[in-house]
Image (spheres, rainbow, N blue to C red):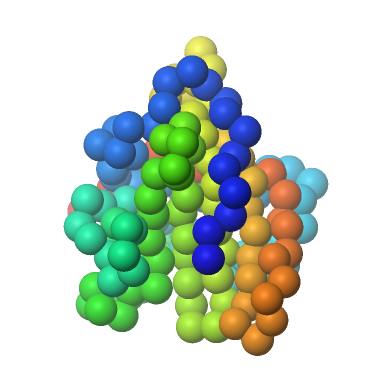
Length: 146
């Protein structure tokens, strides 16, 4: 399940190769996280490897020490893709019956350059079709562990 396109935050689209690497995802201040704390890993590595879901690339979820939370690619329930308009990226984290999706675009500022993505996040659960908005979110590029 994918959410509609985000508001464009910059004139420069997030080219796939510029998104590769490690990111830290977080809700903006003042937004309620619900189950996001268990769905969103401390570190997410966006890769060019194809995920098990068609049209997605693989996201490795990692703990704060850089250890992978998913043992093998076929166990992977997380993925990412550029949206249809190409102006934003959708990053999905899954753990069985619960899912969260970050829909984000570049936020180019003098202090962050192109190392920050901003947008919104929603959750959904396999036991119901309702999307639960969780508010505004930010992803900041970081070095990959190891």
